[in-house]
Amino acid sequence: MARYEHIKIFQCAYLLTLEVYKTTKNFSKEYKYTLAEKLKNIAHELLDLIMQTNTLPDKEKSKLFLLIDFKKENLRIYLRIACDLKIISGGRLGELNTKIEEIGRQLGGWQKWTAKS
Image (cartoon, rainbow, N blue to C red; front, side, top):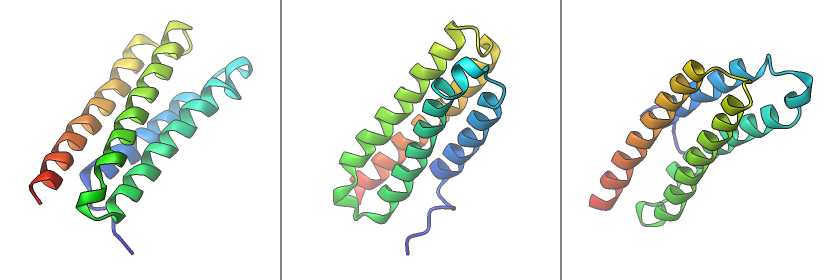
């Protein structure tokens, strides 16, 4: 069984997922079962993809790297929607985007490291 807890990108995505849960728990009823669920699902999918990618041989990781990047950007878009709808503050959006950017940096490093292997 592959280990993933030691991977920095997993740690960042895990903390981001926790922050998404904290952020969405106070969404109004109107958005709790739509936008909040969508955000949580995307965060879960991001974690799943990171774990799945870690189990693959280096030669097979590139497709999943693209999916991880897509989910990362997908999460960013839906958080922006929440901000534009005044469900979360601009400051909170900034905090979450900082975490997403860190995941992007980690992903870039992982891609470079894998390409060298």
